[in-house]
Image (cartoon, rainbow, N blue to C red; front, side, top):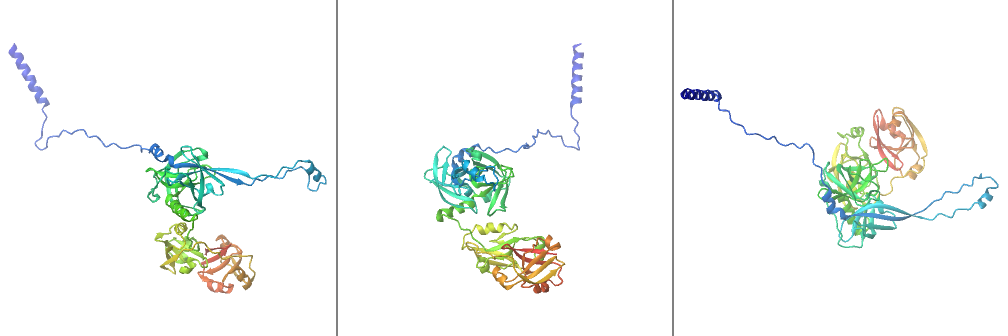
Length: 480
């Protein structure tokens, strides 16, 4: 019995072994045992920066600025209810107590600033302190110091202050040229008077030109900036100041998502001049210019719209002395392409009077290099005084123009060597922006001195380029 049980157990073991033994094909390699592979971890959310360490490092370099200025007060005349011709009006005036003359009022304003040297130099906006009789600086540790205005420059909106103190914490100056669009930045200041406020955002654009500011290539950000932030610093994540908060775009008076800061290298250039001279001088080329449109580019033989089209030259300026002519198109200034016409005053304004500037100029389908020496201030441009007297006239119906000669006496009074006056502009001329009273100085770059000359130049042309003078300004306009 025991022997039979033992044989049964052995048979079961052999059967199990046969069933569990893997079959290996002689034509296929053995299957390798794979180790478990962990897939790479993907970040599903960008980590936001923490600004707390930045505030600890540089928060004590930011100051609040309070100014006092005298403002003339005005009081409306009292209305006694009587008619002007009423015989009793004088009696009413004597019976009604008259208000004492208004006294000048003290106007207070708030702003921000930051310390740029341990011995008390402070940077802020010119519009914060311009016209102030008293300037008070309040530090982060609640000290209140009287500040002296060293100087200011309204063209760049920069002012330099000095307080009588030493061993002050100071900012580290960064390089705004290294800023990248999309980079995180932080602003500090006193919006609406709330001291030591910190806001953050990103760089939205660089080199932004604003219509009212021709000397600053602004840094555009979406950092919340409000009244009181003006003059405060803009920091990068390395705790370096890269700009000064200056303006906002707003229809309500408050922040609407677009803020502008002055690059710190522009500000420090102004600081050096204010320290040395107490004032700032900007280089002037001495030209009036306009953007090159597609139509103007075609008319002048330029392959694409680019550069600054010279419409007028100041007599005696560096531009005139260098040989720049009306109708030249400045393509580059100091090697920098003028794809945006607003870049020209930025480049010129960053230089001092007496500095040289190299210009790449397009003239008569050729490119040339002209070096000019910048002057300090523009001389008076051509002046128009009154409406010129006219004699001979000409109708250019295909362009919608009526023109007349200018008599010699009026031409001398207006200081015009050439030109005919527009007496009527309709149809094409009107749609192109020409107005009655405009003076046409040249057609297709040929000076015109009479309507007879106009007729010869125009001939059978169906398209012309006019150089006109209007209210002391010159500009090119295409017709056709």
